[in-house]
Length: 96
Image (cartoon, rainbow, N blue to C red):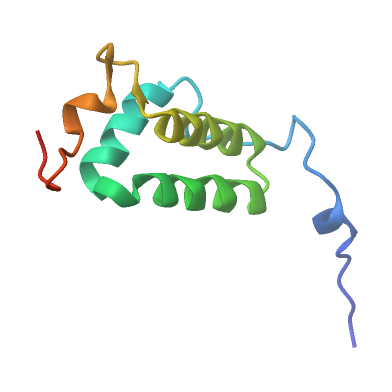
């Protein structure tokens, strides 16, 4: 019976091993895209992206998605210079 060495899977990834799919991308643009695609669930969807990247050992991507998450939580959309007030809901529950 052969045994496999799993010690590498337990180590934190070094910067040499860290691949990034989202390197150089703008978190604000990703926040806008997430809002367009997922609406009110955008923050949750982005949180799953961050978690998936972290679990996969893609620290740079996890950091990127955390930045996107923070932008969504703050209600900011810096790519357009507008706050999320453009998509706000009035007192009777309808979009402005």
